[in-house]
Amino acid sequence: MTDLANHTILVTGATGFIGGHLARRLQTKEGARVRALVRSPHKAAPLADLGIEIIPGDITDPDAVREATRGADIVYHAAAWADEQGDRDAVWAVNVTGTQHMVDAAVAEGVARFIHISSCAVYGSRQQLNIEESTPPSMSGRIYHDSKVAAEEVVFAAYRDHGLPVVVPRPSQVYGPGSPQFTIRVIEMVKAGKIILVDGGKHFAKPIYIDNLIDALVLCATVDEAVGEALNITDGYPVPWRDFFEAYGRMVGVTSFPSVPYSVAYAYALFKELMSRLTGKRSSINREVVKTFRSHNSFSNAKARRILGWEPAVDFEEGMRRTEAWLREQGYLA
Image (tube, rainbow, N blue to C red):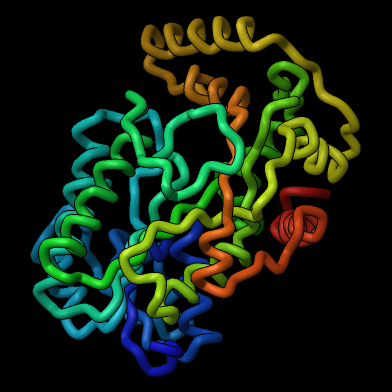
């Protein structure tokens, strides 16, 4: 498989951040016939305006999944419950059972390539630099992380047992235009004066700019050597959280942020969780968030570069410049 022109490609999660960028790229630049399995046709209206076929349905419904997969050459499975806060059974129903429905349909329909978008979260918090794909995924007790480990097991079982041609890209922390977690939420918190560094912000973010990720995802469908492989998709270098937040701070004239030790941040997060349970109001601060800001991990992208022939085209400085332009265009910045 060398190009995607005139191939029928199903994208799940197409109304989300990554899936939306991917579906638009495939439709407008790769010449593919794109269809999107979506829960909300209304939310998918901008995709329909591009000529993308909209199929109402949910990955938790095996009949809807089978209907959406029928006739597809390639499937990109991007739909997921991407939140640590949630009932375990609900998260599992989407991320694990939903993935089982997807691979079952792909096997039954003879799909030529199944790309399951996973996450570097599958490694857990190992506190190691340059983690490679030879490091086995491990359960950590965190709901989202563990569900992604279990979902990968489903995908690779379909590869081993049924010969489904799978590729499992593992993005790190995706930022850029439209990113709800690492762009929109961050700039809103910066503007509200709510950013507090943990341990001076010396620990690491592992950014991947959205366009770099989409470039890699396209190659996952076109490079035959990628079949059967898991691939870390990251810009290739960690960025201290201090530098990450200060890049957003400069957009609004904030030059520094207060800092607290990890122990203080952890205790405060525990307090916020307890208050959330008492009041029924969700808190944006919890212990899992604080643990993220203490992470001293990084992930090697050498395997993805070697197998896909991919290089991240947009560095951190340029990525933030493009992100700022988008934030201004969308009205998040004056």
